[in-house]
Image 1 (cartoon, rainbow, N blue to C red):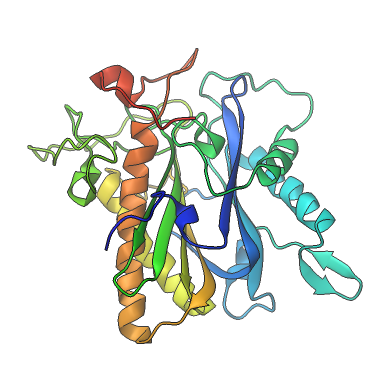
Image 2: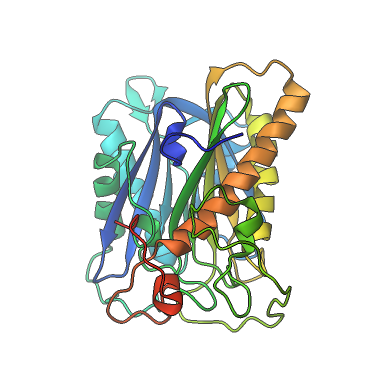
Length: 334
């Protein structure tokens, strides 16, 4: 395995990502859209999820494919971002065909960032417009850190953010992940600056600091304003059924557990979406599914660390960025 050319989820051919950020709001939206409809599933392990249209991703439902996935800040208000994305896709002629109509399938998940110091006194819900803006900006290059759904994200002690990573397997199949990190737990050891994810790092993609020397996680996380929920999307160009997508999403939760301590708490809405474009056939479905799940988990682990590593400070932040606290220069945030 090796990282893809961009080390982003868009290394998976046919996948594009768009972000919309409002720095005054301290929130934003991230959209993952396929060039064509994709098989998808979802695995939810957090105790406080907020979602839209996730029931459609079950293997026994009539809709077998989706057009886009949305990650948004704003708690329940952020679910309206999916409507903006659906409007844009409908105008483009995308969606599930019902007679003469097209109904875009846009599952979404939200994180809680309402108490992070931003201006939340809106008269009209801003997330529908942010969703449309994110869709219209979708491409293969995008920034990490304080952008999109990670704009106002935090962790227990540091600012969170949007991260992404990829792997190309020996058989040529690509796996990628994008994660909005807004966790109740920590992503670094008690004294930092090393990340819990360090054992899975390639090169210096999040600082090259090596593993944590002393295993001393905080056992009683203190709730901070704006926290709770790690949202991930994993993607592959392998030809997977919805059931196989579910297995990949479930396995990818290992990546959250490796990078965030503690993870999957009753106050987190941790979930993983998975999508498959179907461009490459799995020669051995059993072994291939195992390998894909493992690769997806590794990508999620690395993406979480990268999201925090590339976060940038902004006026009114309730917690410092990783770079502010540990004094390392970074350049990937946008």
